[in-house]
Image (cartoon, rainbow, N blue to C red; front, side, top):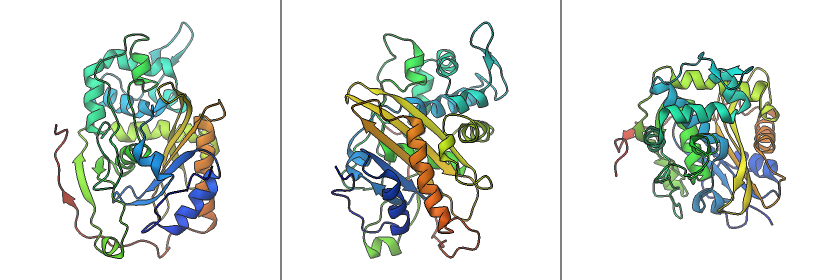
Length: 324
């Protein structure tokens, strides 16, 4: 089935949309591309999935776990955590290779309440968009897992339900250094001409938190679970894969949440794939993102001196952290 059926493309960047549609092909899933410095949604492919359905985030939840652990001084970037008699690992390596046991140990040290507090701060469990028609909020677990310990929560995202748009908002905050924007999807010429970025909140994280996890996200693409996302050694992609089964949805999941670090145009690209059979994974999702990045790079989209950048009006701050 064509995943673009029913999408409203008014106001979208058609160059980016064509690249995203070509990269996804006929695979069941969704791609969301956002400007991380403004919160503007540049394209949403398969908007029904991007807006109306929440899915288990799989290992992408490890970004929340890592930032919480760094901010709460549970771990430092270079702290070696023993995982077995012969294996110890630091945060960078654990993120790059998506080690479940490592993040289970962080989750156990953090405890349920602190993990949930940081997840809420980062926008999970609430609508990411500002007046985006049809958007539903994701869900945050009300209690810790009864079986399997914190590893299910903090390594697999068990109990969370996250939309691709929510994850794009979270990745935008990481990409821009800690500002959580409302996601906006202007549809009319008036909305496009009067677009104003709006901040939801500033993330209260350790000063070193985002720089420290960026090393692991870069490692995921350079030598870890997301190597198929790379498109140019001089223009690195940073990202986090996720692979697991969403038993509530009866589907296998493949996630890749990413952004490019250099170049004239910064993008957040979130790919979510879903399938009733084990044909999807975070690695496959990273390949879809890689195809999108390469498509745009071939059109000189990221080239310095491109004329595609725009001047934007003053940013408005509209909401403090974690209102109920």
